[in-house]
Image (cartoon, rainbow, N blue to C red; front, top):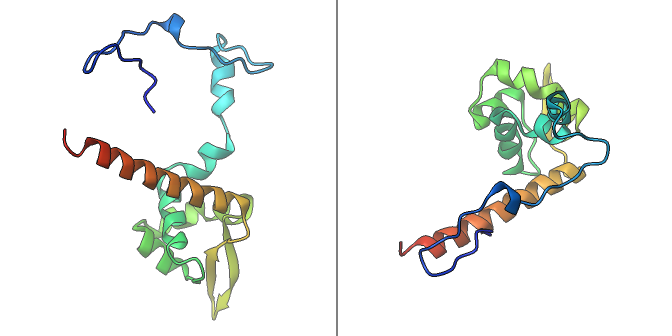
Length: 144
């Protein structure tokens, strides 16, 4: 995946800023620092996948797709604190629907991964693709 052209084995050509193509985003001025900040502010990808604690929650539930879990089970599996779970639960359950509230046992709510969510399918695909890419990289660099 490296885009650095090679002249000979072990040698790489130096790239300058002019060699990197620019991508124009309609209605966006890349020289305006305020606009750069607003481009990322509240971006759904960043909101779903940061901080790492949210990814840990999603991964913990994806490992057992048909399982239902109490909050204690989720934050223990994700190795996060009780407070962290409660801090991000609303974003993952209500806002993005990555996790479903599927019922209660007594006073304890039960949650599961939302298998009908397109976002969950994309995250699962991304995990698979990243795992495959990592395996290829390890294989390619094993002898180095």
